[in-house]
Length: 180
Image (cartoon, rainbow, N blue to C red; front, top):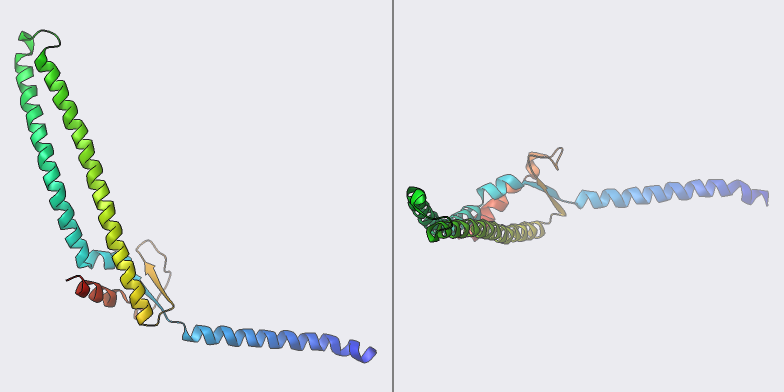
């Protein structure tokens, strides 16, 4: 019975060493085949041709809305100037004063609606563009056998990366080529 007791601690140590060795082998084998890359998200979005098209489209929509707002503002300013010019001759709460108040409120309400429309349009367009960019990154990663592609910004996320891992320009070429 004493022979079994002497070999038991040795058997445990051998089992631990084998387990550690096997685990290390699996870990290093897996990491040896893991491909990792990163991309500069700010550069990608900034140089993506779809970003410029998005901005141009939003600017066009916004300029139409702002033109209507400018017309409403001009109408208010003319009405207000007429009111200010004739204010001393008008009775309190005149129809002209009421019209100025009403036109001013229309202008302010429409201004708020325009700002909300612009924000909503920007968000919807940006969301659609980011979906397109993410789909391209995902397809690129899959097609090139990457296990992970990190997205870096000027704020951080990546403390260090070999420049050879940066796939920003390759993805930019693909997404711009496909954007035509």
